[in-house]
Length: 446
Image (cartoon, rainbow, N blue to C red; front, side, top):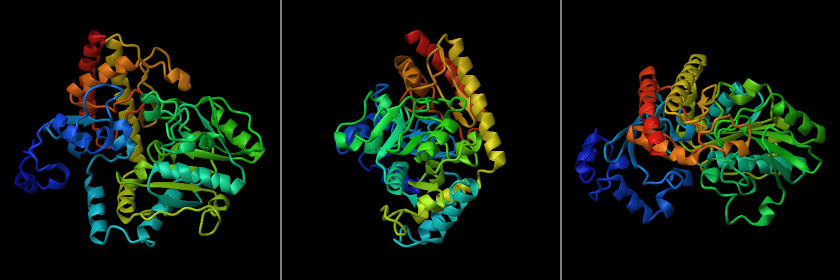
């Protein structure tokens, strides 16, 4: 449905005035993006939404449902971004919408404990046994920030070890050699972070177990990195990290903001069999609303205030709308759902791989559980250096060709694809068909 965005009455009649009506006669993506750029730096509120790495002007979304997006011009896209993994049941899933509506009618924020935050913490603990205690917050970045602070407070040490290509959000101490938007924009880190903020951060190559000493508070890792493409840990790597942390008394932090409740019921730690001391969550547990969480061993977690001396607080932490949405989303994720997601991921991965191969584009399309990667190079990536051999120019051409075909990918060569419960066989078939045409066009334009 294409709405006349200059007509507030029509938008109200369609029931979507808050999302779509500008009331100023704006009719195109370019016009609305220019208007946004006049008040928002770069026109975006998250750098990874910009088209800087691929060129062109971003589409501006007016609404979404299931696996579909519509921009302000009324163009339809099949969506493989799914809010960078925060959406797993599909956009505007009726159960999630109903849960949010019921919660909103009770009030949107209290600054006091609520039953829903307790229930969401219980649900996380029931699915991830390593999370004996859970603390909710507002984003994945806040979760990783708090996890690092907690590890330092619990151990009395300062040093943190991270891995090149693993992205842990907008955290000063962890942006060095990060994946995702940092890799896409070609930045070594970010301006505005003083040397002192990263002086106790050591960066190691992924898939190599570093030798630690007793100055290390924690090792933080994406156990299945999904921010430098999709890179599988080699056999023994995660178990080696566990053993090395135990040897020196450091804590092991798993950043499962992407993989938590996406890769399976218990996250990637249930797949690999390695138990971390602290786990970071986000995305799926909010049902598409802002949320984050950390969980871990009771003796570690109870260093958080008000029981311990490691401060954490947040006005909107445990927000009743976000927890209601998260509980609704998790209620949909049973074993059958994960089986379906894994099958659709394999179908998507094979289809994309075949399409690129037919066009003569060197590519590896890794599929791990429910996630799909896209590495435009002839051999798989095993670390950040190898991940950066992906052909970014070819990706930009393929990205725009797919967009022209009505398929939305993330505008960066290092992001994964997120098939969800709304990606039916028909949707996957449409995406694969579009990929065949898009790959041929991208190859011919090279």
